[in-house]
Length: 282
Image 1 (cartoon, rainbow, N blue to C red):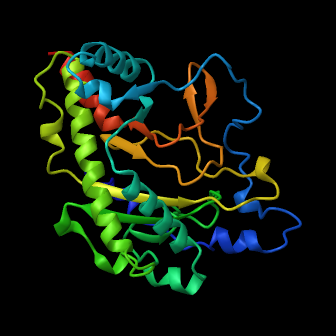
Image 2: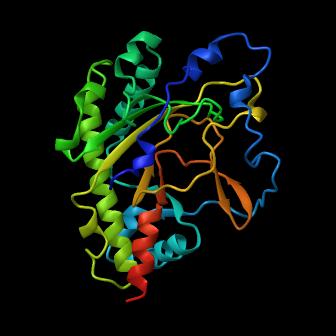
C-alpha cells in the first residue's frame, strides 16, 4: 500500500515531549483543538463496548464456524475489535514495548538522529504538518517502513536501544503473518475463497508508527491524535501501557476503549473495507 502523495510533505515542529517537560502556564495555542469534536464532552453510551475476537477459536475446527460468524458481524457493524490469543509471543510483544519506551526516553538529540527529512513521512517527528497555522496533535512519533525488506531505509531505524532493529524486524514479520491470517478468516467469514483478500496484501507494505503521548496539565484542551479513519487494509494496534484515552466512534457515540491484557486492537482500514464491499457484490 502506497501512502497518498500529499502525505509526503511536512514541516518540522517542536518535540511535544520536550514541551511537556516545561512548566507551562497555558497550552500553546497551536495545540488547543477547538477545531474538532470534544470526545470527553460528547455523549457516551455505556452499553457500547468494543467486541472481542478469539484467534484460538478461529483456528479450532470445532469453534471456527461460530467465531467466523462473530467476526463477520463485528467487521460489518464495527470495523474494529480486540483480538485475544493472537499467537504473537508474549516475549516479543514485551520486548517491542520496552524498546519503544527506551527510545522515547532518550535525550532529544539522540532521537533527532532519526528525524524526518524533507519529502519523507518516515522518521522521528510529527506527520502531515503542512502549514505554520495548522493545529498540532499532542504527540511525538517514529514512523518506519518495515516491509517489504527492500523498502527499508535503515537510516531511520534506531541503533539504540540495543536490539531495537532486531526486535522490530521480528515483530513486523509476526504482525504481517497475523494480518494475512485475519484477512483469510475475514474472506472465509464472507463465504469467499480463503485468499480473496490476502492475495492483494502478501507483497504489500507494512508501516510501523510508534506514538508517544506526553502528560498534559490541561488534557481537555489537546488531542493526542485527531479523529480519523485508517487508509490501510488492516491496522494492528499495540498499546504500551494502561493509559486510557483511545475512543472509537460508533452509532453517533464515542466509545472508550479499555484494551484487554495481551490483546491487539484491530481496525479494518479504508482499503480493507473497500475490498470487503467489492467482494460482497460478486
